[in-house]
Length: 270
Length: 285
Image (cartoon, rainbow over all chains, first blue to last red; front, side):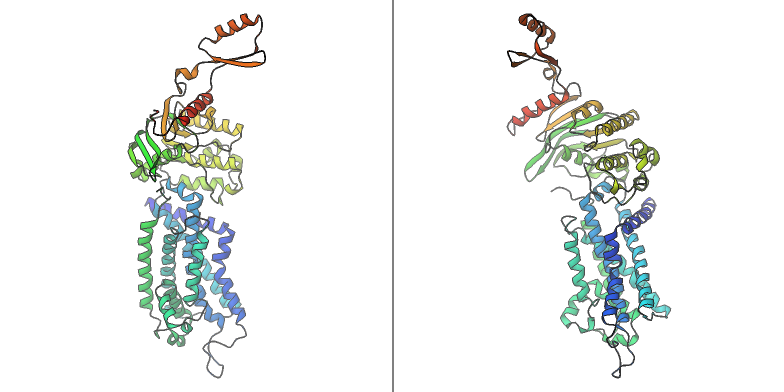
């Protein structure tokens, strides 16, 4: 009970800190929205993707990039944000101070994950509003699609958070955290169908990307936001939502085990 | 608190080399020693931050290596320094931390006690170094600790702030808190502590009541005077007799005559100097 109450208190505290920190708001919160705008504007004069040979039908590039940007937002909010944030808190003494108080580790994690969930809901709502009203992207009307959206989003964000917490153990200092974390998430975004059309990547690269969770988050979001006619462009020819759940679930378990094994309030002296 | 034969080794070298002492309930104990002597390592072992290599330690009846949340709730820890981002106000930070403890102090009273009442709504990042240090102290006492660790608490304080801080610590002592203090300011140790221990090179070279540190010999007054432009000095337990003899010899006032009793600082420097010169491995306790 006390653990949950303190966790809830941590969520409010973390959210306040998060939105007061200008650089994280810019680079993780607004980043997917800015990227969507860049792609939408860059390809605004290109013909629709998936159009019939006569040029009719298909969807705009803005619409095509929406699922990728939603998935990127989930990954950045969890992995990049928490990976850098917690490594920084380890470096600047925040965790050492907390480790000397009766705050349960679980409450601390709950605060971080809750903060990411709340901020990423704001983020995705803003992203979809921009897509709908600035770039005239049609959003799904089918409630079943929104149900898929909800579980892929929740599952993906929580998995990203747990992986971010696990990844925060890797940088040796708070200062090196961005140098360690950002290349990992950037690489994943390029091979997982966020910036590049996944169906046009070489097969071996698709296979490598399939090991990691971002590919599955992006695929789940494509099933929500792209027309049914795009399903055949998937490597397997189907959205494979069952596989999406399975892979995210496996990564969640891997992340939880890694957190349990690696998280310490401070690096104990050797 | 009970410490017996505490050792901590890093890569074969002993940073802490067989330290033993007790701190009684309600007592304020100062741990003194030069930088790198093992003070912080010792205090971090007692706080549960580091695992020891050997010896027995009991803090509030618990081995700090296995101290749970209920044990931590009885501690107040003021660490040496921290560089947290501080994007919260003093009031927000203390209110939040107060929630961690079963029976916290009143947040407003604590802010008042550390002299930050006018800064309560200021973000911690906007405070000066000394003011941030006071926030550290406030966070250390917010949980109404039975045992308070103060690791160099007044570094960066101006003299006035230091005196205010001493007043605060004296009030905590009156309320019955047990305090373990490390400091580089010997006047601070002399003012606050009941007993002190001096660590040099990982060993406890002296321990005792604050007036007994260095032993009786260290307390012998020093008489200094000048004759023919040359400074002379002599340590004697009968300084007045020496002064009278000098007066008689000079046939009048003695130039630059002074009689001083060594301060804790003089005694401490004497202790550290003599033990630092002693070779490693020599048993100096």
